[in-house]
Each structure stands twice: as structure tokens, then as C-alpha cells.
Length: 285
Length: 279
Image 1 (cartoon, one colour):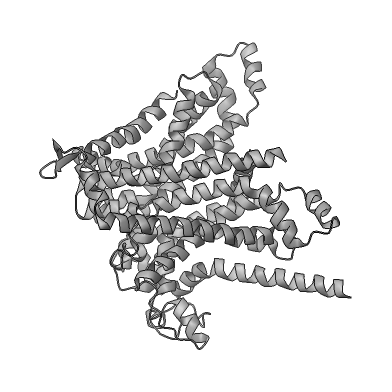
Image 2 (image 1 turned 180 degrees about the horizontal axis):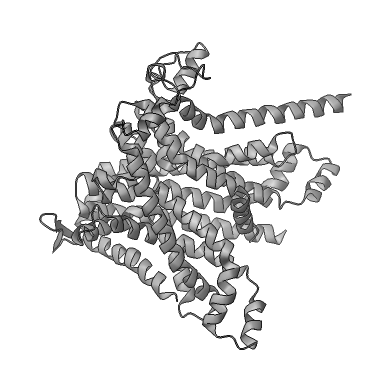
């Protein structure tokens, strides 16, 4: 009964994963029908590892991944703390926070194009309404474009992270915090020394999920900036697309895809080790 | 006295934060909705309006009358067909797999489940590069099948995992009792397990539909003909267009089914995640 699923997954994952590995060490003749030609050894990998474009993309990718995790976790944690209180209209806030999750990635790209538009976008309109200089070219400059894409992505991932962290917060027994309050701990100290350590086993998986997604971001970049201006928003994943489907250099694209996989797995392994440690710490208490 | 004003201050902070969160999270969606009901001239004005002084359905009318540069209605039909087919196929393959992996002695069970999780970590493009070549060589470029097959494969590992959580929620005792009563395996599966799985199958169908509906990379790379345009690709094509109002209207129409489904199942989604956290 598992056979159909295993066969299909093997067909669409294992076979391509092996093919990509083959491409990465061969030269491919694109015309007429994509024929694998000669074994070229590690040339494609060496080419990538000695290319500034690759390292630039690697830098953008890591920065993007770290910033996405940081910003999303901090904002989601704050929202989760808010939703963990009782107040009028909590249900409304909860549903609204979930909404971006339901927006198809491409549609979310379009929303943010409309927000970021230099001339008649909402952000600049808002700045003008405040009397500020509302002519920021959000997607134009190298640094600002990357951060604009980041804002759009963080907005999309807040729902998932908030629900996940909120679920964790609700597992922290109220009695623990009440006991701390009786012992004279203020709300900051109670948060810093009780809630945060107890939440670590929940936060680390969130960070793992977010980082994996950050490594795979494609739609938002494609709609908002196409990897530009210049290469400012070209992450490794986007570089694979450019090499494969703009330059039709499948050898380089395959090598880059594998290098990105190695990077992802290394970071995940590091985070997984942290998770095990945090579990042990929480368990040993 | 001090305690009371402190409490009042804390309450004010709570409500201020709540309003801020509400505005920031909802605004981009509100913005596109607003854009879709304004005339093209007002959309392109430097005096950005934040509240509508009028509402026009002009852009929606144009979309459905085929006045737009991108065939939005046709793309909706295409996406509907492809997403429905993908959902049914994915669930049909995932349910038996999930049942076998969770209830039977399958050799290499752990490796299979681990492999299903591992592929999720790797970049999709890693798999898309050779798939692209295969699809072209098999003559599946620009066909429904060329879209459905990758959709099914890409959602399958996740679907097996979700279906597994539904299978595990059925008490084993029910099946054991049927076995003692002399029921055969097919009888157990068709008479007992499948009916009990009905809510899970329904959720899986919706999930499969939504995931296929929003997919962008596959149609971008595996299709080019306008006759097989999907909604997401149509949206992207429209960004090249000059009619912003129509683009906004098309965006609202593309996002709407997904938003409705998600809002409707908000509680279930939350429960699923909560269950994951508790484990």
C-alpha cells in the first residue's frame, strides 16, 4: 500500500536528486534534446566556489535567513504574548494575524508591489500624509530592496510562528509565573527567567522551519525584484533559477543547488543540536 | 491608587498594541481590496487615498467579460481542474501509504518517513531541474498532466504526514475488535477505517487543493501557452500589464477561495499545530 507513494516520491525526488548530481559533474548539450555529454569532474563546483557571484548570493542568503528568523520570531513572540492575554476583540486580532497565511505567495507579492510602489504606493502615501518625504524607492536601492523583500516575507510567516509560539505559551503553567510573582519577580524578570527558557524547545523548531523556508524563498523575490537591483536580492535559490532557466547552464545550476542543500543541512543540524540541548535543559529542571 | 493607574496603563498598552497589530497585519490585504474598487485614474494618483469615497465594480466586470489582457476566467478554470485533480490523486495515494506506515509492519518504515521529511528541507529547484528535462522529453510541457504530476509529488510527503496524524487518532482497539470478529483486511479498511477517516480525507482534499491552487514555480517553468495559464501565473503576467485595477481585482479573486477555506478551518489548523507543539 505504500508502494504508490514511495514509487512516486522516488520518481520525483530520488531520480531527480541523482540526475541533478549527475548534471553537476557533467557538461550538458541543451540542443536538441538535453543530452548529458562529458564527465567534467568537480569543475562546476570549483567554478561556483571561485565565483564572486556565488559568494555574494551566499551572503545574501545567510543574511536573509538570519534576519527572517530573528524578525519573525521577535514579532511573533510579542504578538503571541498579546494574544495570551484576555482583552476585548482578541478573537478579531487572532483571525487577522492568521490572514496573511491564507494569501497565495504570488498574490502576496502583488500586495507588496502595491505597498512599495514609489509613486502611488501606500507606504509612500502614508509618509506623505505624515508630511514626510514620501518618495522612497523601496525596491530600487541595493540595501533597501533586500529589506523590503524581507518585510514582505516576515509578514507572510508571522501567522505560522505566532500560532506555534502561542500554543507553546499556553503550555507554560500559569502557576509557575504566579509563584514567581509571589516571590517578587517583576514581569520582565519572570519573562526572562521563566517564560523564555521554558519556551526554547518551542522556539528552536520554529526557527528551523523559518530557516528552511527562507532558503527556499522564490515567489516573493520573483514578483517583487526578480533578484535585482543588480544582484541585491539574488539568494542562492534564486541563483539556481537564474543559472538554470535564464542562462540554461544546468551544470552550474545543479552544483549551486547542491551547495545550497549542504548549507541548509549544516544550519539545520546546528539548530537541531541546540534543540536537543534545550530539551535536556528544560527536562533537567 | 498607584496600583490601579498601573493596571489602567497596562490595559492601554495592551489595546494600543492590539490595534497596531491589527492595522499592520491587515493593511496590505485591505490595500489591494481598496485598489480593486477604485478607478485607474485614482489608483495612479500621488494623493494616495486610504479610505474609499466611492466603490466601482468596473475591474471585476472587465475581468469576467474578457476585456482584460490576461484571460483570468480561463486561468481560473485551468487552476480549478488542475488543483482538483491534484488534490484527489494526492489523497488517494497518501491515505493507503499513511495507513500502512502507521499501522502495519513495513520494511524500512523509518527510512521512508525520514526520507519524506528530508526532501522537504532541500530546495525545490534541485528536483525541478531534471523534472523540467523529463517533462520536455515526454512531451508533457504545456499539458495538464505536466502540472498535476509535479504538484502531486511535491505535496505528497507533507500529505502522508498529515494523513498519518489522522490515522493515529483512530483507536487501534476498533480495528482489533473487527479482526477478532473475523473481518478481513480489506473489510477493515473499507468498512471501518475509511469511514472514520472521512474528516481527515476532507481536510486533505482541501489542503491539496489549496497547495496546488497557489503553486507558482511549476507552472512558471512547465507551461508557456496562454491556454494552460494558471491563476498564479496569470497574476504574475498581469504585473507586466498596465491595468493595476484589474490586477488588484484578479488578486482578490485568487486569494479569496484560499482565505475563505483557511478562515473556515482556522480552528482545525490551530489544533493541528498545537498538537504538534505538545508532542
